[in-house]
Image (cartoon, rainbow, N blue to C red; front, side, top):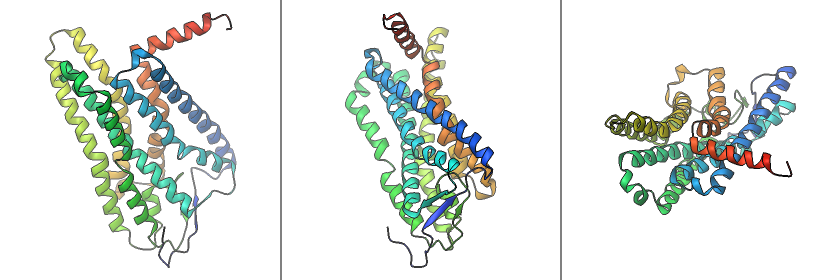
Length: 314
Protein backbone atom coordinates (compact mmCIF):
# COMPACT_ATOMS: atom_id res chain seq x y z
CA UNK A 1 0.00 0.00 0.00
CA UNK A 2 1.59 3.25 -1.16
CA UNK A 3 1.36 6.18 1.25
CA UNK A 4 1.83 9.89 0.79
CA UNK A 5 5.39 11.15 1.32
CA UNK A 6 4.13 13.38 4.15
CA UNK A 7 2.89 10.36 6.11
CA UNK A 8 5.44 9.47 8.73
CA UNK A 9 3.22 7.68 11.25
CA UNK A 10 4.29 4.02 11.18
CA UNK A 11 2.02 2.76 13.96
CA UNK A 12 -1.10 3.69 15.90
CA UNK A 13 -1.76 3.45 19.62
CA UNK A 14 -5.19 2.14 20.66
CA UNK A 15 -6.29 3.97 23.80
CA UNK A 16 -9.09 1.51 24.56
CA UNK A 17 -11.33 2.10 27.57
CA UNK A 18 -9.03 2.96 30.47
CA UNK A 19 -5.38 3.30 31.46
CA UNK A 20 -6.05 2.14 35.03
CA UNK A 21 -4.41 -1.33 35.49
CA UNK A 22 -7.17 -2.47 37.87
CA UNK A 23 -9.91 -1.50 35.44
CA UNK A 24 -8.02 -3.12 32.57
CA UNK A 25 -7.69 -6.37 34.54
CA UNK A 26 -11.42 -6.38 35.25
CA UNK A 27 -12.23 -5.64 31.61
CA UNK A 28 -9.89 -8.41 30.49
CA UNK A 29 -11.81 -10.89 32.65
CA UNK A 30 -15.24 -9.69 31.46
CA UNK A 31 -14.38 -9.64 27.76
CA UNK A 32 -12.51 -12.96 27.96
CA UNK A 33 -15.66 -14.60 29.33
CA UNK A 34 -17.79 -12.90 26.66
CA UNK A 35 -15.44 -14.03 23.88
CA UNK A 36 -15.36 -17.62 25.14
CA UNK A 37 -19.18 -17.65 25.36
CA UNK A 38 -19.35 -16.23 21.83
CA UNK A 39 -17.13 -19.01 20.48
CA UNK A 40 -18.94 -21.76 22.40
CA UNK A 41 -22.40 -20.50 21.43
CA UNK A 42 -21.70 -20.04 17.73
CA UNK A 43 -19.68 -23.25 17.37
CA UNK A 44 -22.55 -25.12 19.08
CA UNK A 45 -25.04 -23.66 16.59
CA UNK A 46 -22.81 -24.69 13.66
CA UNK A 47 -22.37 -28.25 14.98
CA UNK A 48 -26.06 -28.78 15.75
CA UNK A 49 -27.28 -27.45 12.39
CA UNK A 50 -24.61 -29.41 10.50
CA UNK A 51 -25.15 -32.71 12.33
CA UNK A 52 -28.94 -32.92 12.59
CA UNK A 53 -30.95 -33.93 9.53
CA UNK A 54 -34.08 -32.18 10.86
CA UNK A 55 -32.31 -28.82 10.55
CA UNK A 56 -31.27 -29.14 6.90
CA UNK A 57 -33.51 -26.28 5.86
CA UNK A 58 -32.68 -22.91 4.27
CA UNK A 59 -33.41 -20.97 7.47
CA UNK A 60 -30.88 -23.02 9.45
CA UNK A 61 -28.39 -22.93 6.61
CA UNK A 62 -28.42 -19.13 6.92
CA UNK A 63 -28.26 -19.30 10.74
CA UNK A 64 -25.19 -21.56 10.49
CA UNK A 65 -23.49 -19.09 8.14
CA UNK A 66 -24.41 -16.23 10.48
CA UNK A 67 -22.82 -18.12 13.39
CA UNK A 68 -19.60 -18.64 11.41
CA UNK A 69 -19.61 -14.98 10.37
CA UNK A 70 -20.03 -13.89 14.00
CA UNK A 71 -16.99 -15.95 15.01
CA UNK A 72 -14.91 -14.21 12.33
CA UNK A 73 -16.40 -10.79 13.09
CA UNK A 74 -15.67 -10.81 16.81
CA UNK A 75 -12.26 -12.45 16.32
CA UNK A 76 -11.08 -9.46 14.27
CA UNK A 77 -11.20 -7.15 17.29
CA UNK A 78 -11.52 -8.99 20.61
CA UNK A 79 -8.23 -11.00 20.77
CA UNK A 80 -6.14 -7.89 20.14
CA UNK A 81 -8.23 -5.94 22.65
CA UNK A 82 -7.56 -8.65 25.28
CA UNK A 83 -3.81 -8.52 24.58
CA UNK A 84 -3.84 -4.73 24.96
CA UNK A 85 -5.51 -5.02 28.38
CA UNK A 86 -2.46 -6.95 29.66
CA UNK A 87 0.29 -5.21 27.70
CA UNK A 88 1.91 -1.84 28.17
CA UNK A 89 2.53 -1.68 24.42
CA UNK A 90 -0.86 -0.91 22.88
CA UNK A 91 0.49 -0.09 19.45
CA UNK A 92 -0.65 -1.60 16.17
CA UNK A 93 1.38 -1.31 12.98
CA UNK A 94 0.20 0.81 10.08
CA UNK A 95 -0.42 -2.28 7.95
CA UNK A 96 -1.97 -4.16 10.89
CA UNK A 97 -4.42 -1.34 11.49
CA UNK A 98 -5.37 -1.25 7.80
CA UNK A 99 -5.87 -5.03 7.77
CA UNK A 100 -8.08 -4.95 10.85
CA UNK A 101 -10.16 -2.13 9.41
CA UNK A 102 -10.66 -3.96 6.11
CA UNK A 103 -11.76 -7.26 7.66
CA UNK A 104 -14.00 -5.63 10.27
CA UNK A 105 -15.75 -3.48 7.64
CA UNK A 106 -16.05 -6.28 5.09
CA UNK A 107 -17.49 -8.72 7.66
CA UNK A 108 -19.91 -6.04 8.88
CA UNK A 109 -21.11 -5.56 5.29
CA UNK A 110 -21.50 -9.32 4.91
CA UNK A 111 -23.65 -9.48 8.05
CA UNK A 112 -25.89 -6.67 6.79
CA UNK A 113 -26.46 -8.57 3.55
CA UNK A 114 -26.94 -11.92 5.28
CA UNK A 115 -29.61 -10.48 7.58
CA UNK A 116 -31.36 -9.13 4.45
CA UNK A 117 -31.18 -12.58 2.81
CA UNK A 118 -32.66 -14.14 5.96
CA UNK A 119 -35.57 -11.70 5.81
CA UNK A 120 -36.17 -12.75 2.18
CA UNK A 121 -36.17 -16.39 3.30
CA UNK A 122 -38.88 -15.61 5.87
CA UNK A 123 -40.82 -13.60 3.28
CA UNK A 124 -40.89 -16.53 0.82
CA UNK A 125 -41.71 -19.05 3.58
CA UNK A 126 -44.72 -17.05 4.83
CA UNK A 127 -45.96 -15.26 1.72
CA UNK A 128 -45.30 -18.01 -0.88
CA UNK A 129 -45.19 -21.28 1.11
CA UNK A 130 -46.18 -23.48 -1.84
CA UNK A 131 -43.20 -22.26 -3.88
CA UNK A 132 -40.74 -22.12 -0.97
CA UNK A 133 -38.90 -25.35 -1.82
CA UNK A 134 -38.50 -24.31 -5.44
CA UNK A 135 -37.41 -20.74 -4.82
CA UNK A 136 -35.10 -21.41 -1.86
CA UNK A 137 -33.28 -24.44 -3.23
CA UNK A 138 -29.72 -25.36 -2.20
CA UNK A 139 -28.10 -23.70 -5.20
CA UNK A 140 -29.94 -20.41 -4.69
CA UNK A 141 -29.14 -20.40 -0.94
CA UNK A 142 -25.44 -21.04 -1.61
CA UNK A 143 -25.36 -18.25 -4.23
CA UNK A 144 -27.04 -15.83 -1.81
CA UNK A 145 -24.55 -16.60 0.95
CA UNK A 146 -21.60 -16.29 -1.46
CA UNK A 147 -22.94 -12.91 -2.62
CA UNK A 148 -23.12 -11.77 1.02
CA UNK A 149 -19.51 -12.74 1.68
CA UNK A 150 -18.11 -11.01 -1.42
CA UNK A 151 -20.50 -8.03 -1.45
CA UNK A 152 -18.27 -5.61 0.42
CA UNK A 153 -14.79 -6.92 -0.43
CA UNK A 154 -14.05 -4.66 -3.41
CA UNK A 155 -15.63 -1.58 -1.83
CA UNK A 156 -14.00 -2.03 1.57
CA UNK A 157 -10.60 -2.72 0.03
CA UNK A 158 -10.89 0.53 -1.95
CA UNK A 159 -12.14 2.36 1.12
CA UNK A 160 -9.26 1.08 3.23
CA UNK A 161 -6.74 2.16 0.59
CA UNK A 162 -8.32 5.63 0.44
CA UNK A 163 -8.13 6.00 4.22
CA UNK A 164 -4.54 4.81 4.55
CA UNK A 165 -3.20 6.84 1.64
CA UNK A 166 -4.13 9.98 3.58
CA UNK A 167 -1.17 11.71 5.24
CA UNK A 168 -0.89 10.91 8.97
CA UNK A 169 1.51 13.41 10.53
CA UNK A 170 0.62 12.75 14.18
CA UNK A 171 -0.73 12.35 16.76
CA UNK A 172 -1.15 8.61 16.33
CA UNK A 173 -3.37 7.85 19.34
CA UNK A 174 -6.69 6.23 18.32
CA UNK A 175 -9.41 6.91 20.88
CA UNK A 176 -11.00 3.52 20.30
CA UNK A 177 -10.36 -0.18 21.04
CA UNK A 178 -9.83 -1.15 17.38
CA UNK A 179 -9.04 0.48 14.03
CA UNK A 180 -12.42 1.72 12.83
CA UNK A 181 -12.81 4.21 9.98
CA UNK A 182 -14.20 7.29 11.84
CA UNK A 183 -11.51 7.53 14.59
CA UNK A 184 -8.70 6.89 12.08
CA UNK A 185 -9.97 9.64 9.75
CA UNK A 186 -9.80 12.10 12.65
CA UNK A 187 -6.03 11.60 12.85
CA UNK A 188 -5.31 12.62 9.26
CA UNK A 189 -3.47 15.93 8.81
CA UNK A 190 -5.40 16.46 5.57
CA UNK A 191 -9.07 17.40 5.32
CA UNK A 192 -10.85 13.99 5.31
CA UNK A 193 -14.24 15.38 4.20
CA UNK A 194 -14.14 13.55 0.85
CA UNK A 195 -13.38 10.28 2.61
CA UNK A 196 -16.21 10.94 5.08
CA UNK A 197 -18.59 11.43 2.14
CA UNK A 198 -17.33 8.16 0.66
CA UNK A 199 -17.91 6.38 3.98
CA UNK A 200 -21.42 7.82 4.18
CA UNK A 201 -22.28 6.76 0.62
CA UNK A 202 -20.89 3.28 1.24
CA UNK A 203 -22.86 3.04 4.49
CA UNK A 204 -26.06 4.00 2.68
CA UNK A 205 -25.45 1.32 0.03
CA UNK A 206 -24.24 -1.47 2.31
CA UNK A 207 -26.23 -0.73 5.48
CA UNK A 208 -29.32 1.33 4.69
CA UNK A 209 -30.37 -0.43 1.46
CA UNK A 210 -30.31 -3.93 3.06
CA UNK A 211 -32.18 -2.45 6.04
CA UNK A 212 -34.87 -1.02 3.75
CA UNK A 213 -35.10 -4.40 2.02
CA UNK A 214 -35.65 -6.04 5.43
CA UNK A 215 -38.26 -3.42 6.31
CA UNK A 216 -40.20 -3.96 3.08
CA UNK A 217 -40.01 -7.75 3.53
CA UNK A 218 -41.49 -7.53 7.01
CA UNK A 219 -44.23 -5.16 5.93
CA UNK A 220 -45.28 -7.80 3.39
CA UNK A 221 -44.89 -10.56 5.99
CA UNK A 222 -46.99 -8.69 8.55
CA UNK A 223 -49.67 -8.05 5.95
CA UNK A 224 -49.80 -11.77 5.15
CA UNK A 225 -49.83 -12.83 8.82
CA UNK A 226 -52.72 -10.49 9.64
CA UNK A 227 -54.81 -12.16 6.92
CA UNK A 228 -54.38 -15.58 8.55
CA UNK A 229 -57.64 -16.48 10.31
CA UNK A 230 -56.26 -18.94 12.83
CA UNK A 231 -54.70 -17.26 15.87
CA UNK A 232 -52.46 -20.31 16.42
CA UNK A 233 -51.13 -20.16 12.86
CA UNK A 234 -50.56 -16.41 13.18
CA UNK A 235 -48.49 -16.92 16.33
CA UNK A 236 -46.51 -19.74 14.72
CA UNK A 237 -45.80 -17.65 11.61
CA UNK A 238 -44.68 -14.67 13.66
CA UNK A 239 -42.55 -16.81 15.99
CA UNK A 240 -40.41 -17.90 13.02
CA UNK A 241 -39.53 -14.23 12.44
CA UNK A 242 -39.12 -13.06 16.04
CA UNK A 243 -35.47 -14.12 16.49
CA UNK A 244 -34.44 -12.53 13.22
CA UNK A 245 -36.26 -9.29 14.08
CA UNK A 246 -34.45 -9.07 17.43
CA UNK A 247 -31.07 -9.66 15.76
CA UNK A 248 -31.80 -7.07 13.05
CA UNK A 249 -32.93 -4.47 15.60
CA UNK A 250 -29.78 -4.87 17.70
CA UNK A 251 -27.30 -4.91 14.81
CA UNK A 252 -28.79 -2.21 12.62
CA UNK A 253 -29.71 0.08 15.51
CA UNK A 254 -26.09 0.43 16.59
CA UNK A 255 -24.67 0.33 13.03
CA UNK A 256 -26.90 3.14 11.76
CA UNK A 257 -25.99 5.31 14.74
CA UNK A 258 -22.26 4.77 14.18
CA UNK A 259 -22.01 5.22 10.43
CA UNK A 260 -25.01 7.24 9.24
CA UNK A 261 -25.69 9.90 11.87
CA UNK A 262 -23.82 13.25 11.68
CA UNK A 263 -20.58 13.78 13.61
CA UNK A 264 -22.26 16.21 16.01
CA UNK A 265 -24.14 13.23 17.49
CA UNK A 266 -20.91 11.38 18.29
CA UNK A 267 -18.43 11.36 21.15
CA UNK A 268 -15.52 8.95 21.76
CA UNK A 269 -17.12 7.21 24.74
CA UNK A 270 -20.51 6.81 23.01
CA UNK A 271 -18.86 5.51 19.83
CA UNK A 272 -16.87 2.96 21.84
CA UNK A 273 -19.96 1.78 23.70
CA UNK A 274 -21.94 1.34 20.47
CA UNK A 275 -19.00 -0.40 18.79
CA UNK A 276 -18.72 -2.69 21.82
CA UNK A 277 -22.37 -3.55 21.38
CA UNK A 278 -22.23 -4.61 17.72
CA UNK A 279 -18.66 -5.98 17.73
CA UNK A 280 -18.74 -7.98 20.99
CA UNK A 281 -22.17 -8.22 22.62
CA UNK A 282 -24.36 -9.07 19.60
CA UNK A 283 -22.13 -11.97 18.40
CA UNK A 284 -22.44 -13.40 21.93
CA UNK A 285 -26.22 -12.93 22.09
CA UNK A 286 -27.15 -14.23 18.62
CA UNK A 287 -26.73 -17.95 19.49
CA UNK A 288 -29.06 -17.41 22.45
CA UNK A 289 -31.53 -15.45 20.34
CA UNK A 290 -31.68 -18.12 17.63
CA UNK A 291 -31.76 -21.10 20.01
CA UNK A 292 -33.84 -20.05 23.01
CA UNK A 293 -36.63 -18.79 20.75
CA UNK A 294 -36.49 -21.81 18.43
CA UNK A 295 -38.43 -24.90 19.49
CA UNK A 296 -36.73 -27.19 16.96
CA UNK A 297 -33.24 -26.26 18.17
CA UNK A 298 -34.26 -26.53 21.84
CA UNK A 299 -35.82 -29.97 21.28
CA UNK A 300 -32.70 -31.25 19.52
CA UNK A 301 -30.44 -29.78 22.24
CA UNK A 302 -32.48 -31.39 25.02
CA UNK A 303 -32.45 -34.78 23.23
CA UNK A 304 -28.68 -34.68 22.71
CA UNK A 305 -28.04 -33.60 26.31
CA UNK A 306 -30.39 -36.35 27.51
CA UNK A 307 -28.58 -38.99 25.46
CA UNK A 308 -25.22 -37.77 26.77
CA UNK A 309 -26.38 -37.94 30.39
CA UNK A 310 -27.91 -41.40 29.93
CA UNK A 311 -24.84 -42.83 28.17
CA UNK A 312 -22.85 -45.40 30.21
CA UNK A 313 -19.71 -43.26 30.09
CA UNK A 314 -21.39 -40.25 31.73
